Amino acid sequence: MTWHNPLTPAGAPGVRPLTRARRLHPGDRVAIVAPAGPVRGDTLDEGLALVRAWGLEPVVMPHARGSHREFGYLSGSDEERAADLTRAWCDPAYAAVFCARGGYGAQRMADLVDWAAIRAAGPKVFVGYSDVTALHEAFAVRAGFATLHGPMPGAVTFLKDEATRESLRATLFEPESRLTLALPTARALVPGRARGVTLGGCASLLAADLGTRHARPGTAGGLLLLEDVDEQDYRLDRILTQLIRSGWLDGVAGIALGSWAECGSWERLRELFRDRLGNLGVPVVEELGFGHGPTNLTIPLGVPAVLDADAEAATLTLEEPALL
Image (cartoon, rainbow, N blue to C red):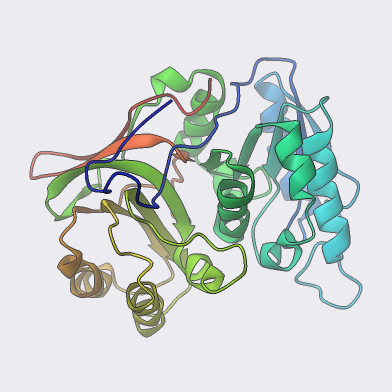
């Protein structure tokens, strides 16, 4: 489809809609990969049971329950983790690839994935968040595929929060029912209305991607999602300042803020976001309900949407379903 953001001059580089995957159906097989940290077996098993209850057949890839011989914060070697992702994507038996959990390590294996084979295989459902932000960006830039920023079966939020699970389930099976996204906590930090294409994820991962060989050049015409966990206010200040100084936020259409678990007082953070983002001249919504908080809504990345930030409501409304 052809879609133009009025804030992005014709012909200028910017964030464009990406190729969407088909929705899931009962009986579909889902590959489970661990591209970052090691998983707890009992937690993952509980999550997989919930996935089976949706009628899906999860299959854990060979190294997803592994652990790196030297670095315990990795689920396996970089080569093993990249091979699992490539194999899962290129095998037509799998309709989707779910990440088991985040942690750290996706950046280390991203360049070892066979992106030419991924592109040739075509789009599939891909779900994850946190450290998986590095892979969301890679799928967007190196494959042109839309992905889902959403909960993972090896994460506690998926096990404990019904709204989190239902958001993902409905997006996977009934995407038309999940066009307007927000929690009751959402409200305008900077009022306004903007159209653009969704992108983003964990702020520290987006900043860490800057300057790398395959990094996204900028966010012009995009609706940027930002969230993070366990970052003190001065570190978030540094992250946001880097995104601004690099020019990466030039032309961004709007910004949606998710959860900031273990990042300190929300009142303090609100002032920080107002200070760092308020001068961009674009709408900013706070507490939209995605990320590391008690509820983690599934947000499609690479899809045209409208961000509304006013006194009455603060929502992100998709202009087309997340999946075909």
